[in-house]
Amino acid sequence: MPRTSIREMKFSKVYPMYVQKAERKGRTRDEVDQIISWLTGYSDAELQREIEGESDFETFFDQAPRIHPNSLLIKGVICGVRVEEIDDPVVQKVRYLDKLIDELAKGKTMEKILRQ
Image (cartoon, rainbow, N blue to C red; front, side, top):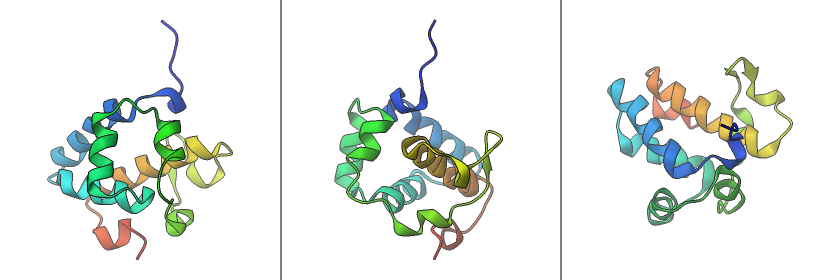
Protein backbone atom coordinates (compact mmCIF):
# COMPACT_ATOMS: atom_id res chain seq x y z
CA MET A 1 0.00 0.00 0.00
CA PRO A 2 1.53 3.35 -1.00
CA ARG A 3 2.37 5.75 1.77
CA THR A 4 0.37 9.00 1.92
CA SER A 5 2.34 12.21 2.31
CA ILE A 6 1.42 14.65 5.05
CA ARG A 7 0.24 17.10 2.39
CA GLU A 8 -2.29 14.54 1.08
CA MET A 9 -3.66 13.43 4.45
CA LYS A 10 -7.26 14.49 5.04
CA PHE A 11 -7.63 17.05 7.80
CA SER A 12 -10.99 15.52 8.71
CA LYS A 13 -9.29 12.16 9.37
CA VAL A 14 -6.56 13.62 11.60
CA TYR A 15 -8.75 16.06 13.55
CA PRO A 16 -10.41 13.32 15.68
CA MET A 17 -6.94 12.09 16.66
CA TYR A 18 -6.02 15.58 17.87
CA VAL A 19 -9.19 15.66 19.97
CA GLN A 20 -8.60 12.15 21.36
CA LYS A 21 -5.04 13.03 22.33
CA ALA A 22 -6.20 16.15 24.14
CA GLU A 23 -9.14 14.44 25.87
CA ARG A 24 -6.95 11.56 27.11
CA LYS A 25 -4.96 14.20 28.98
CA GLY A 26 -8.01 15.98 30.43
CA ARG A 27 -8.19 18.76 27.84
CA THR A 28 -11.18 19.59 25.64
CA ARG A 29 -12.30 19.69 22.01
CA ASP A 30 -12.93 23.43 22.47
CA GLU A 31 -9.26 23.92 23.35
CA VAL A 32 -8.20 21.98 20.25
CA ASP A 33 -10.54 24.15 18.15
CA GLN A 34 -9.16 27.30 19.76
CA ILE A 35 -5.61 26.26 18.87
CA ILE A 36 -6.55 25.46 15.27
CA SER A 37 -8.43 28.76 14.92
CA TRP A 38 -5.53 30.70 16.40
CA LEU A 39 -3.05 29.12 13.99
CA THR A 40 -5.19 29.31 10.84
CA GLY A 41 -7.68 32.13 11.34
CA TYR A 42 -10.65 29.84 10.63
CA SER A 43 -13.85 30.89 12.43
CA ASP A 44 -15.82 28.24 14.33
CA ALA A 45 -18.19 27.79 11.38
CA GLU A 46 -15.36 27.63 8.84
CA LEU A 47 -13.49 25.12 10.98
CA GLN A 48 -16.61 22.97 11.26
CA ARG A 49 -16.93 22.97 7.45
CA GLU A 50 -13.29 21.85 7.17
CA ILE A 51 -13.86 19.06 9.71
CA GLU A 52 -16.91 17.88 7.74
CA GLY A 53 -15.14 18.27 4.40
CA GLU A 54 -12.59 16.22 2.56
CA SER A 55 -9.77 18.78 2.33
CA ASP A 56 -6.24 17.51 2.53
CA PHE A 57 -3.74 19.38 4.71
CA GLU A 58 -2.33 21.26 1.74
CA THR A 59 -5.76 22.65 0.83
CA PHE A 60 -6.64 23.21 4.49
CA PHE A 61 -3.62 25.47 5.00
CA ASP A 62 -3.72 27.08 1.53
CA GLN A 63 -7.32 28.17 2.14
CA ALA A 64 -6.73 29.28 5.74
CA PRO A 65 -7.84 32.88 6.22
CA ARG A 66 -4.48 33.77 7.78
CA ILE A 67 -1.63 32.00 9.49
CA HIS A 68 -0.97 33.67 12.83
CA PRO A 69 2.22 35.77 12.70
CA ASN A 70 3.29 34.39 16.08
CA SER A 71 3.42 30.89 14.59
CA LEU A 72 7.06 31.72 13.85
CA LEU A 73 7.59 31.55 17.63
CA ILE A 74 6.72 27.83 17.64
CA LYS A 75 9.95 25.95 18.25
CA GLY A 76 10.82 22.41 19.20
CA VAL A 77 11.00 18.86 17.94
CA ILE A 78 8.22 16.78 16.41
CA CYS A 79 8.96 13.33 15.02
CA GLY A 80 12.68 13.96 15.53
CA VAL A 81 12.72 17.13 13.41
CA ARG A 82 12.96 20.73 14.59
CA VAL A 83 9.80 22.47 13.35
CA GLU A 84 11.61 25.74 12.73
CA GLU A 85 13.99 24.00 10.30
CA ILE A 86 11.37 22.38 8.03
CA ASP A 87 11.70 23.75 4.48
CA ASP A 88 8.31 22.73 3.08
CA PRO A 89 5.79 25.40 4.22
CA VAL A 90 2.79 23.04 4.27
CA VAL A 91 4.62 20.34 6.22
CA GLN A 92 5.93 23.00 8.59
CA LYS A 93 2.38 24.24 9.30
CA VAL A 94 1.17 20.69 9.92
CA ARG A 95 4.05 20.17 12.34
CA TYR A 96 3.28 23.51 14.02
CA LEU A 97 -0.23 22.20 14.64
CA ASP A 98 1.14 18.87 15.90
CA LYS A 99 3.46 20.74 18.27
CA LEU A 100 0.64 22.91 19.64
CA ILE A 101 -1.56 19.86 20.27
CA ASP A 102 1.38 18.14 22.02
CA GLU A 103 1.81 21.18 24.26
CA LEU A 104 -1.91 21.08 25.08
CA ALA A 105 -1.69 17.39 25.97
CA LYS A 106 1.36 18.06 28.14
CA GLY A 107 -0.64 20.50 30.25
CA LYS A 108 0.70 23.86 29.11
CA THR A 109 -1.56 26.82 29.63
CA MET A 110 -3.43 28.20 26.64
CA GLU A 111 -1.62 31.50 27.08
CA LYS A 112 1.74 29.80 26.54
CA ILE A 113 0.48 27.56 23.73
CA LEU A 114 -0.90 30.56 21.84
CA ARG A 115 2.36 32.48 22.29
CA GLN A 116 0.74 35.42 24.08
